[in-house]
Image (cartoon, rainbow, N blue to C red):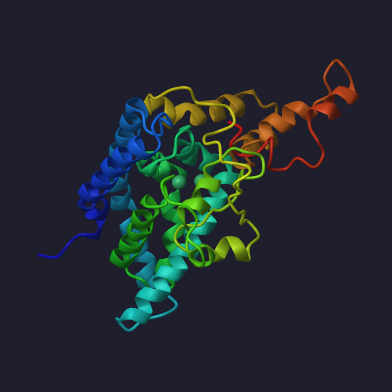
Amino acid sequence: MQFDAQWLLLALAPVFLACIGYEAWSLSRTRPGASLYSWPDTLCNAALALMHQSADKLAWLVAIPVYAYVYRHFRLVSWQPGWLAWFALFVAQDLLYYVFHRASHRVRWLWAAHVVHHSSERLNLSTAFRQSLMYPVAGMWVFWIPLAMLGFTPTQIVAVVLVNLAFQFFVHTQAIGKLGTLEYVFNTPSMHRVHHARNARYIDRNYAGVLAIWDRMFGSYTDEDEHDPPEYGIVKPLASCNPLTATFHEWLAMARDFARMPDWRSRLAALFAPPDWCERHDALRVPPGGAAQARQRVPENNTEGEFGSRNT
Ligand SMILES: [Zn+2]
Ligand SMILES: [Zn+2]
């Protein structure tokens, strides 16, 4: 019987759960009082994982025929089966993951789904489970279409996407420090702690999936500084462990902003501009207090910090 790649993450669930159990037990002994796990947070993460897995299974029903159509009619390369093809697929998909992840922080439509992953104020292995069932609506699957054009079959695409996600489970931990030279090549727990932090210097940094090289190549890498420990979460805390609130709060906020904008240009910007666009738009409108007050509210050089994508 052939293993269906779609079930990879569910098949690995016992491994993930065992690692979470070990991490929680070991941290409770080595860092008592640090409260790195809490039941409401962990149960919310588990519920979000199940909701995401269900939505993903439905999404593959739509995406796989699209990949198959593109593979049949538009592929540019035909690969000989073997390790070279798998290596090329792995590198290409990891680069596309970097593009997807960076876009997910800078385009509000995508951020509305991705914010779920960032909205906990804890970081532990169970945080990796924190995903959105809205990813298929946001269009995550569209980012893998180029892989079909590059000559990879739908089965290969599904497999490599899920292997990439499975790897990322292991970087969501505070139990492991820096990993020396590995930090230059792979996404590591230290690198990903920075990504989950809302400290001004860490916001919108380190988008890596598996390979760290893309962040270093494209200027989005920031080192974890022991003098500035990460504070996890989004700038405006969610303050809820309800998985439905976590999933839909940003979609509702985006819909409200879309409805209140005065013209179509602003309405489209409310959907597709950076997540902070509406706030910057509001702040730049001259208030009754005058232009000086407006200038004070938006620092000119503030593009990603205080008004960054975590500011939801
Ligand atoms: Zn992210
Ligand atoms: Zn993460």
